[in-house]
Length: 543
Image (cartoon, rainbow, N blue to C red; front, side):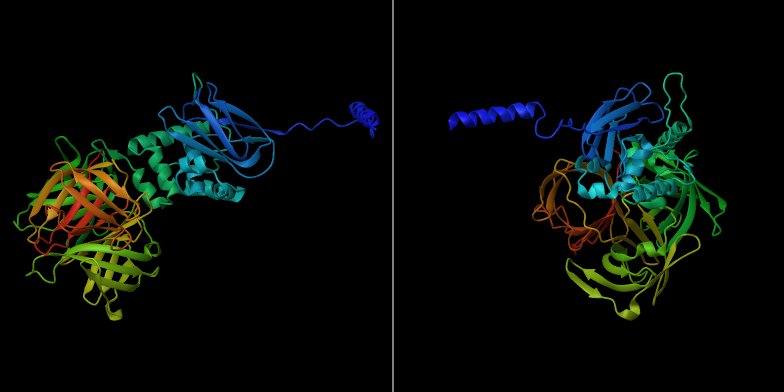
């Protein structure tokens, strides 16, 4: 029996080896290979750099040639894909390939494709590449790619003409050696020159696109910047102070602010911005014996502190805000607001805090005046204001007490800041958005202007370092360099977007509530300490 089994097994092996059992066997089919090709360039070719491709299934790398061209062959590839390469300055650029079939695809990698990737990712492109999970892959459809192209084209309208341009799949010949590059490459040169003139990085522009900041914010950061301050750019600004809102125009080439009349025409009043020695983005202005100290944030919002004026009276802080085209409907949502106000001219100023909800048609649907941390008194329906857009691009706020001017700014993070020029005060507001906790070890340097009830001002240049963070409780500590004072903050308290500070153990830090205005570089603090009811505005200094 055993011998027969062995013989049977041997015969089966022989038959199999000889193709027995029904004819010749077919060889295994070769795995299909997809070729990804393109050019990596920033105007000049990106030579000798590693291109990475990561797909729904399959990945690969290649090294760019001297002219920036590359080819990646990947077996069994399944689209969509995302690609990356590092530019000579260290900036990481990305590109995409939408879902579909075909064994030969083109994907250039340039600053323009980085912006298209940001529009598709709706966030950080580096994280999009690193994760590239099912949610990320689902966004890479042909329809979404078309929309992303249109979004970038619209955002750059008036600055760069991308009509008919296919930055990802179009023919790109990059400048290298004696080759000057083709039309698409020259667009990259124009974009690079524009970013340099505006002192805006591609990373900042990509972040703004990914944050869905919109044309208003992006047009602002792409205007020519002052040689002495990246945040101070050519364009129109709202000058806003107690009971006053006026339009002005800044020229980065001459470093002067020209006041405009009600029709937007230039007047003969010019305010030259004279730089402070050793302090970038801080200026002095002097017109008709009125001297102002101007501190400019990275966003262009500037704190204007009056130093002297002919009347001799002290004044509330003023602000310069880049003028943007913002629709009323964009402002719908629930807001935080802090201010420094008084009921009439015979009283001193005191901190105030408000919350309100605004509908898309400009009607307030709810509102409350708050004291302390948790006590808020709702407004009566008859007292709810209405916000309306003006032909000049500003807004007016109307309630039973009258009408006040409002200026609104949208940052590159997509968040809004509103400033209300009250006849007896100033109110600064921002939509309620939960803010992330800071990172241990991060530092910040800022100008700090503290306005007391009689409007005397204490000025300081401060710097702080984050010492500890407790994610479970939403708290962190911050140490001040000048005296070692340790502040303890609770993030998103008492409402999302605010932060609360208790009185420090050495009592030098007053109890207060702070409103950080998105990523503008500006923050506002109101004191809750009855012994010292101040109003504080800080402006981050350039790093």
